[in-house]
Each structure stands twice: as structure tokens, then as C-alpha cells.
Image (cartoon, rainbow, N blue to C red; front, side, top):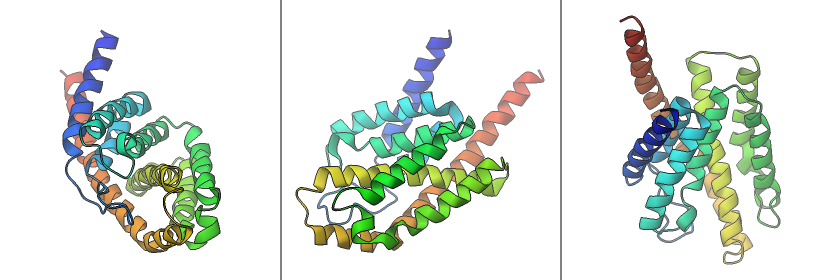
Length: 228
């Protein structure tokens, strides 16, 4: 029965993610013609990790994302378009379980983002990293103090979607380093210095609404069932 529920929840969740994947709320990768914009599925991925944990949430987003990435094979990451959303789902799930991994995982991602050879932001446009540092320090403060309020919930959601931005940027560097010039990368980091914080704040806002409304309804339903 346990595995049946696992498969059922994963399958349904993957299906919902696949549908939402085609509804866009963000801008495409700058400098890449035909790149797919950020979709509302990015926000739903965070809800998946919040509700179902890093295993079910991450696996369902990976399955649903892989399928639609294959159907709609488009830049910037082609068959790997699902990776950023999967990362945010796993990250949110790990935070919910109060594990130590989110602290170290973000450090690893931000280090790779900064120091990636030749085209990392530290070499071309260091100011780009300002929002990540600000939010990560805020995240550490509320996470280590174990605060449980509306502000801390939003911070957890925001740092989760920022983890997706980091892994997406790293993938971007891996895939396009040989085809784009250094100046093009510098221009992308300069322009996105302001744009990616706005985009991630919007995604986090949508995810926060989903988490607040849907998780509240589920908890209410569970409480009603327990009192019967």
C-alpha cells in the first residue's frame, strides 16, 4: 500500500507539473534565440517539495519535466530543461525536513556559479551575485534560529527558487561556454543582475500563495478526518 501511494502521488504530481509547464510567467534566457521562458511550473515545483518532501516532490517534477522537455525540445537546456525545477523541489523538501544539506548545497552551487572557469560571474561581473548573498545570509539566520512564521516561509521558498537559478546558470555555462563569447557572457551577467532578483521574487510570490492556500486546505482536511 505504501508503494502504491508513492507511485500514485508521484504520477499525479508529475501530470500536474507537465500541464503547468506550458504556462509562462518569466522571461527567456537572454542571448539565446528561442529559449523557453520560465513557467508557473517553477512555482509548483516548490509546492511539490513542500507538500510531499524531497523524494516524491523531486522525483515527480523530474519525471513530468523530463517528459515535457522531450516533447518540447527547446533551449536553453533542451532535454535538461527540467533540472532547475527539480532542484528547487528537492531543496524545498530538504528544508521542510530540517536537514543540514540545504546549507551546504547552496554553498556548493554558489561557488560553482562564482568560480566557473573563464565565464563565472566573479571573473566577469561580480555584482551579479549580490542578491544570492543577501538571501542566503537571511536564510541562514531564520533557518538556524528555527523561526516558523510567514516571513521565514517566504524566505525558504525564495532561497529554493534561487537554487534553481544557480543550477540553471551553471548548466548554461556548461552548455554555451564554447559557443558564446566572453563579452556575451559579461553582458548577460550585467543585464540579469537586476532581472533575476525580480523574476525570482515573482516566482517565490506565486509559490508562497500556492503553499499557503493548498497546504492550508490539506491540513484542514486532515484535521477534519482525525476528528471524525
